[in-house]
Length: 457
Image (cartoon, rainbow, N blue to C red; front, top):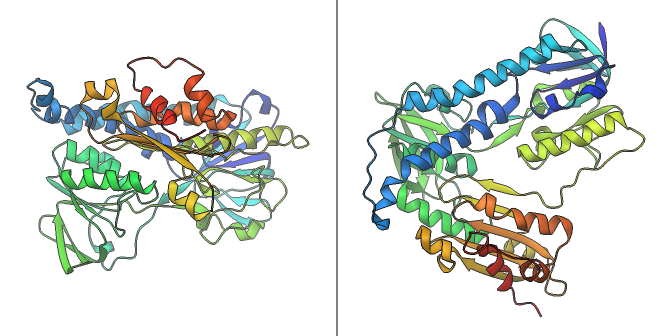
C-alpha cells in the first residue's frame, strides 16, 4: 500500500488546501464525482449564472410600470445552458489536469473512497492507501424523499436539472427551501409553468417568519404554490409525471412534464464507512468535529457540508482554511468562527440573513429591539418601484449590538454586507448609523434607516 502524508477526500474546498507550503509532502486527492465539487459543478456558480439570466428574462414583465414597453421574444435554452457549462466544464477539467499532471507531489484518484481500517482508505480505483493525516471534505448530495413509486418516474435533482435537453412546458418542484425557490424563479422566468409543493405552511420556513411570510405571498402570486401538502405517491404519465398529494382539503393531484426533487441535502458520510477508522457522526449524519475541525481521531479533520450545520460554500471555504492552517501548525491551532454566518436566497425577490431571527430571539429569551425599513421608503426604492421589500434589524436594547439582520428585496445579499461586517467587528447600531456617510440615494440607505429606526436610548 502506498503511504501519504495527507489524503484529502473531496475536490471542492479541499482542493485549495495544498499550496506551495505542502510541496514537500506526499498528497492524495480522492474524488468520486466531477472535479471541483458541488459549488463549481452543480451548485452556487452555475445556479447563479442561471439566476442572472432569469433576471434578464423577467425584466419585460415589469417594464411597463416604468413607461418602457418591452417583450420577451424567447429563451434559447440550449444557448443559455451551453454558455454556462461552456465556462464551467473547462474549469473543472483544467483543475483536474493541473492537480494530476502539474503537481508532482499530488496523486489524484477518481473513485468512491471508503475506509477499510484505521487511516486506511480504499480509493475506489482498485488501490488501497494509508496516510498520517486525512482532511475529509466529501460534501453532500440531494435527499431523495420516501415517496411511493418515485423510483418509477423520471425526475431530476439540482445535480441534473441544469443540463436538461430542452425546456419543459411545465415543472412541479418538490420542496420549499432555497434550492426549490431559486429554480422556481429560473424556470418560471423562462416560461415554464411552475408548481411548488411544500410540506410546511410557508416557503423558506427557516428564515425570519416575517421574511418567509412576505416571500410566500409574493411567490404565490407568480407560481402555483401548494402549502401543507404531503406527497404520497408518484406516477408516470404519457406526458410526464403525476404526484398524488394529501392536503388540508383532502386528496389532490398535480401533473407536469418534469419533476424536480429539491427537498434538501444530506452529508455523504454514509458512503465512507467512517466507523472503520473511528470517526464519529451526529444523528443527522454529519461528522463530529471540534472548534479546530478535528474529529475524534487524531490526525483526521473534516469540513464543509460533511460536518457543518451550515451547508454553504463560504463556510466550507472558511473551514478548509482553518484545516489548512492546523495541518501546517498543529501546535498553534486556529478555531473556526461560526458566530455570524450569513446566507442568501437568489430567487425573486432575493433574501439575505445573518444572526438571530426574531423567533429565535424569543425562543432563547434574548432581549431585543427591532427596526425596519421598506425599500418603498428610500429614494432608490422609488426608482425601482419596489413595493414589497424591507429590511429588519435586531439589536440588544442595552448595548445596541446587532443580534440579527434580515432583508428581502433587490440585491439583498449585497445590501446586507455592512451589517455582517458590523456584527463581526462589534460595531453597535448607533455608531454604525451615525458615524459614517451613507451615499445618497443608494440602496444602503435601507440599512442606515433600519438602524436609525431601532428604539435605542
